[in-house]
Length: 125
Image 1 (cartoon, rainbow, N blue to C red):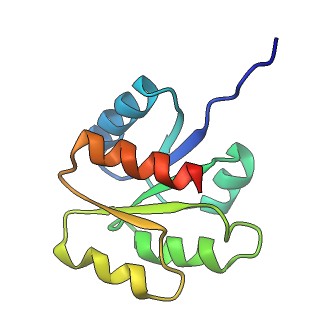
Image 2: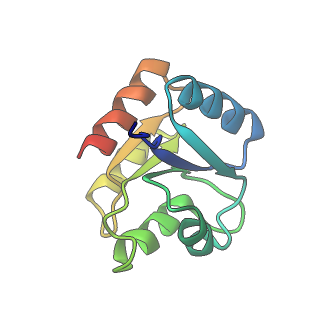
């Protein structure tokens, strides 16, 4: 019998409640979730965990999520890894047109169905 591995999602958000909510929603929809509350050592975490998708908060302590996304997208080893940036700011859509842009953005507060649709779309691509 063939075992199908669950797609793995890495969440990086400094808000523990946001991590808990997203984790619950994603696990309930059949995904495996790894989470961190900071963007430090992001490449080590990606290398160690091999996520299929990264969900990044735009505003993280120490390093902006958009800067982390840019580093991921400009690195030859991680540039094909889908990234969704989350933010409560209305101007987050501008990050889609910048160099090293995320694959998508998710506005906070988010609708559960919108989160799942964006995740499914990125994982199907």
